[in-house]
Length: 455
Image 1 (cartoon, rainbow, N blue to C red):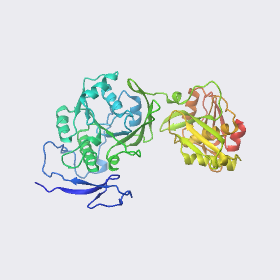
Image 2 (image 1 turned 135 degrees about the vertical axis):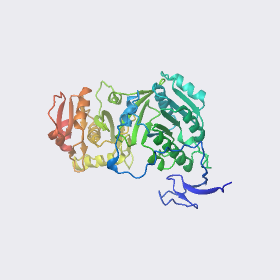
Image 3 (image 1 turned 120 degrees about the vertical axis):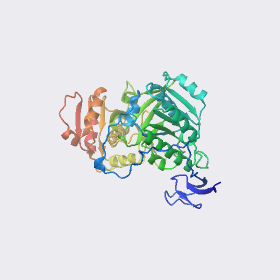
Image 4 (image 1 turned 60 degrees about the vertical axis):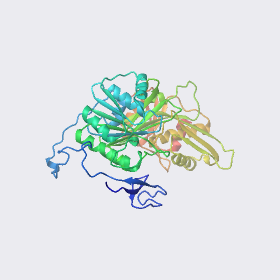
């Protein structure tokens, strides 16, 4: 019988230490070390997944390697294909993380039911077979090749995997799995790291894609060591507000495509419904013109869509003015207020400012600066903006309107939704290619010029 050894691991980054430390030397976090039993069986076990003989081929020249174009698994879900870069790559590991109840299990069960030509294995360590079956009855899909396994021991799971030989493996979730080679509780740093490493070896050796569901901590980061995100090929963040029906699948890391893509779903009684035209749901249909509302033409990855920016400026009733933001960077708002006060002469220092991005979306595109600025001016003057006008431009500290990328796609999206005018940077207008667009393009270069045009 081998001797049981223990070590201390940082719960934030997975740093290992022989003794307890108050501060982690790797991530500088305080009181993050916990003691875990560290014991690995060195004897070869037949049940443990072993790589084939081709996994380690020695040193080769880069010039001698012949590349083969892998055929991706195209799913019926267009939004998932978008965030993955065109489909599921064989042999890849995808990590989907999100808050409890956001719809991670429902989305992946729905994907498994839609892949009718693939043998899909759904491994659940959190729910029973009856619970998964009850959820599947609500979905309007069926797949005779979908198999369920409720197990948390990785060695027993690999025994069933060898018998079934699936085309896709879904793990719900990685924090519930445990390997007998690490004598610590499930969800610990060492268990998550070792279980993820076993699935990584399996995926690369058999070219079978594996999708892992991950939990998140109370501060919003993925639970477990940071090395988990480095080990997988793709990291997807499932976001959403419980008060809204829409969910956002955001790409944080992707070795096989763009890392800035975005997919939008609508949570319905029959599962996740892909939203093909998000601009229509992010714009409120109103008949009366209201002040403090502007439309921004933004980009997420390669996808253009229009969002509604709402602003409210009112006199401050207290000594310190309030700055409340939803869906926008607070520091960016303070920068725009300083530009308006310095360059245009608007006294926002004694005004309460409230800013909201409609639809529960969080906007990070700098091109939304111009729309935010116009919404603030509209609320300050209490005058509504012209009807069917949208904006795309970045605002600099000197009050200039800077150019943004992919302006042609933004213009095409605005024209498709029936907008008649669009304000862009003068530099974008100079480089804009001649097109047959019916929308009127208005170039602007300064904040003062924007104010004169609108008011």
